[in-house]
Length: 396
Image 1 (cartoon, rainbow, N blue to C red):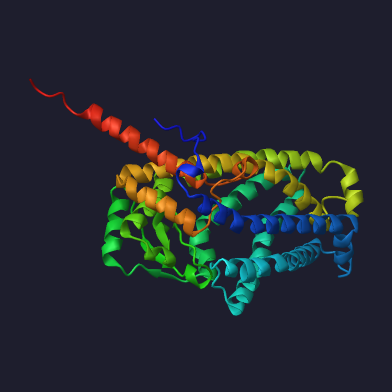
Image 2 (image 1 turned 180 degrees about the horizontal axis):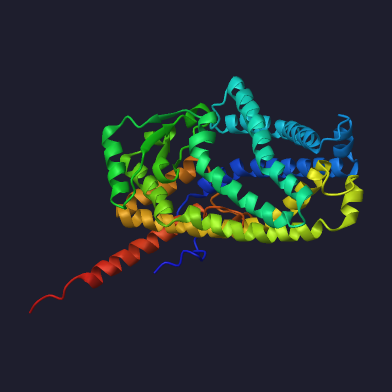
């Protein structure tokens, strides 16, 4: 029995050539630096806003006593400045690094469109989340408890609406035209009791040459989404990928993740409530109390310090879920060779880090490729053993 909640020892050298490991490292290393720079810039921005009292000064410039108007001014201003800070790194990543490695197919027009859409969506989502929270802060001392409930409901709603409302803003989705492949994938889903609304192809190629797939939706909105780039692979590989995604649904990973996230965010909001009792923080930010929407950067700063601690737990759980989905894909397809081809191919084509450091590992949402391939080998061994044990004894 494979323990999917524990790390599986694996040596990348057993599955990948040294040149493949080096190439992935060469691709990933500048991206890690870019992420660190982006994180440092955003942290510096947040500290600058807090210690220069930029938020209350900006809100005061509108000469209004309405906390709602002050709220919108802060959210809009904070979001725009954040986007501007991130823009140089995003432009370099998209038009320099990703182009250099042959991944990015983004056009300047498409890039600008995505940035504007992302800005508007960011403002909308922050408003939907933070406006009720600030009303609670101004209304009750139990804001942290009711605020947690709002945050939890918002997270669940976002998961539900992503494939229906948000994803179509950025991508076009069309029905899969390959009837033979569609029949095979539907049969795979139906064999596990999954009735899907559609198998759709996403126009991922307008931004990248990387390939992937995902399962989305709840209830009557359930569907399988394939990157159009993935269709260049063999039907066996696509079936293995889809089997993995069906595994996430069959093992109820989304509801389980939401429950764990709910528990963790409850603790986070309680700690946030305790930290927000420290009056020194408000003096640093230049606001009189948390009731003033100008305290939003302060609350977000504390939140962003605490939130990464949750990431270690959710990343560990996500890696366990990915192992379970891999085992499920192997169980339903019975195709070890396709699994190996899938994992090896996706990893080398997409230049996934094949030998992550321990620090990188604990933050990964997916096990490294060598570990997933080693899991496949364990499955093959156990499957062969189970088959041998199931054979009847020869009659004498």
